[in-house]
Image (cartoon, rainbow, N blue to C red; front, side):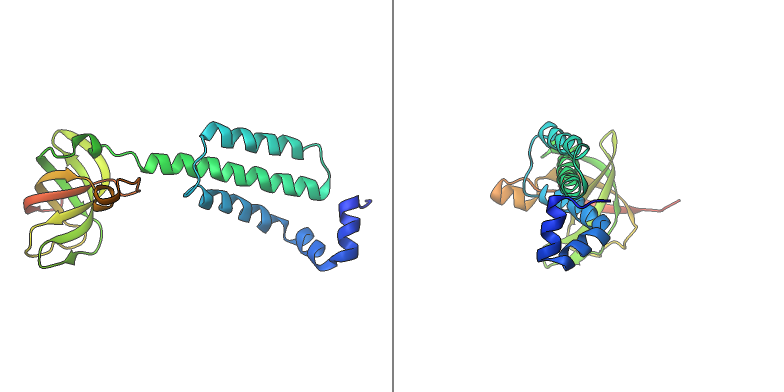
Length: 192
């Protein structure tokens, strides 16, 4: 196997770097995909643009040799991670309860995390399984009146009202938090 011009240049200047690339290329590719997913938190290009850039880099890599192929594969994986992360973040930000902000209805809620108590309210992560007549499965921050805190895993039948999270109310920014529920009171339900 003959060396290309890039490999020859790297061998003369940085043999350790070339050896590292030749032996650790799978880690480089995994790191590229992870970088794309992480960057999608801050940069959200249209999904079609990210997918097209990944396809172009991948197809260009098919006609190149050795190191340029590795570089183009890494670029394609960054773009693919960016596309997948953008799609995932957009899906996480959709909320079924967002159309019902301010409406009050009966709800069945399951406590999913540790309870935090303040002198003003009891707050806990929860999952709404039913709101009014709608059956759904959505994570929320449940705010209960001051009193005894429910244990983790408790199933509560409550009269609830979805409200926007405080971060959205204060900054009107996009956030992964889906909704917060406030309740007038709660009545624990026995689990089957």
